[in-house]
Image (cartoon, rainbow, N blue to C red):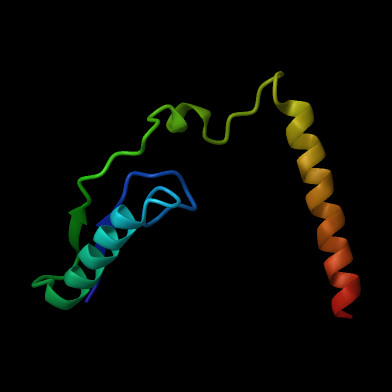
Length: 90
């Protein structure tokens, strides 16, 4: 039965703020409870938590003059690491 627990957090943080163990436990319990007890398909529940910095939305995937060189460098480094990983796995 399809069901969905929604957290309005940045990608990569589906169960809460890193190192906030209590929040992560609560969200995990909510997800397990929803999985076990959803009465209808497409049941959706939103967690009561908010991300500590709601500016993450405006900064998410932002590319501007001030961060372009940093992002280009990170992309090059990632590509080099991927190539290295391929060579080591051959």
